[in-house]
Length: 80
Image (cartoon, rainbow, N blue to C red; front, side, top):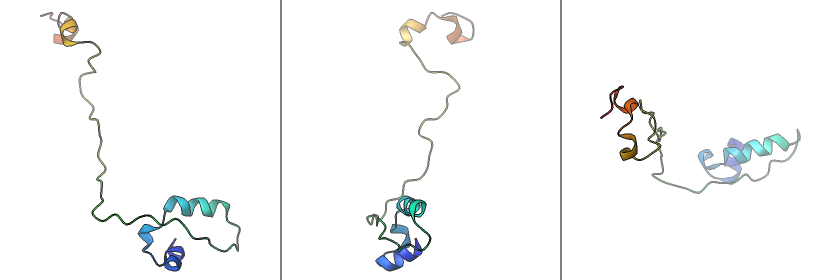
């Protein structure tokens, strides 16, 4: 990837890792390196890795609350 970035005159962070892996999978030993995909410049584009859905200690509500209100298991064994 470093050689491809230098040859294409772009920072190494803009060379597609996936494209480099695909090329390595099919490249022969002394084969000339092809031009790899250059990713577009995206300044201020950083997405932190976070969990989208937090696990809740209660399960999902499969039916409307009004239907479930009389069920004893919702209130620790006591129906309301």
